[in-house]
View 1 (cartoon, rainbow, N blue to C red):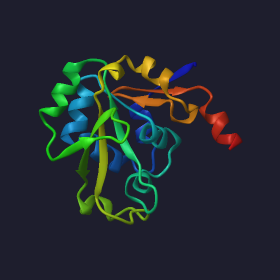
View 2 (view 1 turned 30 degrees about the vertical axis):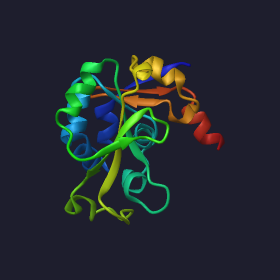
View 3 (view 1 turned 90 degrees about the vertical axis):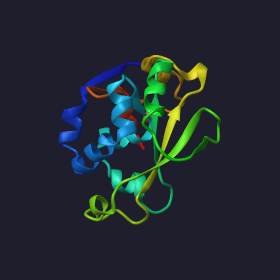
View 4 (view 1 turned 30 degrees about the horizontal axis):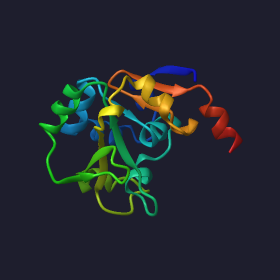
Length: 168
């Protein structure tokens, strides 16, 4: 796997929903995670990289996405769990704690793709054997099209993603 590095701020700046993304990234649990070295990886990172609608991915009808936080050290997880609020439960696969996070309606109502509640699922991947450097994490992903991850400065993406998007 060959990962290409991009400046995450440049990617967000040109996204049609940049304000919504920046609001989500400013939520205490997410901003604490990113400032402590965690990465957001998977579908949410892919949506941002491709310029697709975050409002549809997190708040649209049908299949609703989530945000997955990956960590390389237990201390990063501890920093996030000290600021996160609300009840949680284990994910279906048992790899993460899942929390519901809300975005104010006033923020969401401006997006035409917004069709449902204002909460999204935040997964804190905390299973001991999954606390790894992000490149090792991405090597474990079984689908090329979600081998995307970003922290507070860079976005890593599999160099085959655009070919896959074009072919399918």
